[in-house]
Image 1 (cartoon, rainbow, N blue to C red):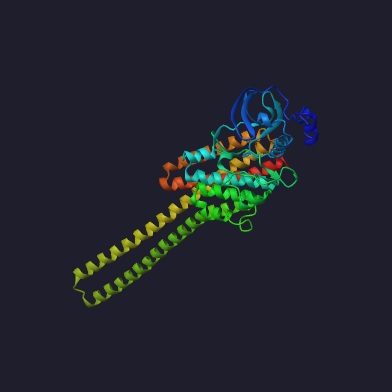
Image 2: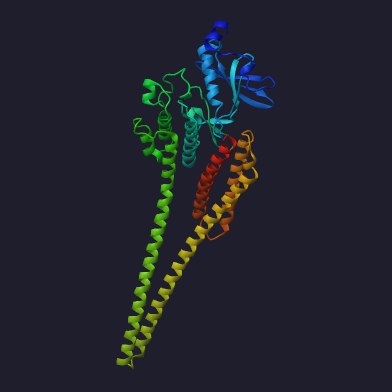
Length: 423
């Protein structure tokens, strides 16, 4: 780059911009070329790194260099387990100035959807995780502006999502390189016409992704793709809508279970009252017949047998009611015990591991280990219930309820841990 270009952009290439000091990146492999960028990978310290630079014909462009620097500056602010970690901005031999970031081993959400490799539960979980990640961006005053399945990675291990490509991201504190940006089909109408960077633009893109992935959130997706003043203002509000929608089936199932139990109990009580009344009536008739027909022994014996049968039905009804109550108590106690076990594990991890972390470097690894350990704990617990009186269907439902509870609790703890590491 010539001296005049440097002066125009006020962008200095040199040691001042190097954020990662270490050995030279080697084994560079070009992955693909876009309209403006070159995407590559390289190795250093035994690790593979993701490299993003400019095409050769654009490396002397002050505007493009400033755009690359802006992407790095915005991306480097972020510390979140579902956002690819940027390492530095370095001059790489043969590639020029490049953003260096972690290599995510996995496939894009676009490829996973194309292969139909995601079950309904995974699709809902990915939507919630992606929305939570974008909510974190909005809380930092950042708008991604290019949300689409090809910019979301799914890790091969753990199947967790990672948001990538902040080339079009923007914030209110930048007054340069503004304008309409995004991918047709995912960009909001108002962003396409006038540009800007509003959280509502990302909400529109999330609605498009939601509609493509599952009909479960169809109503919310339509609301996200409504006019800007009719859709959720940011991803945080959208996340609350999703959580409320996910809680509704559980509340409905619980309500129906309570109503069914109440109906069964009511029917049993009514039958008990009816049978007891029938028993009293039969006894009175028996006494009357004895008084009037002392010689009719056969008739008296028949009435006694009828009374015994009625009493047997009454005892059988009471026994079934007791079995229903006992089974319902067993399910409730199993769920409560599993929740307590999850709470205990998370409290121990918080006290022994995460409360002692002061930097982000070991955080992601520790979180992945914790998630894996928690999943194993839930699976082992549910497997131990196979020999109990619970049916296989109820055991599997218990497993899903505990997964949901574990996900919510880990998310709550993560907010605390991230605030602790980056107050």
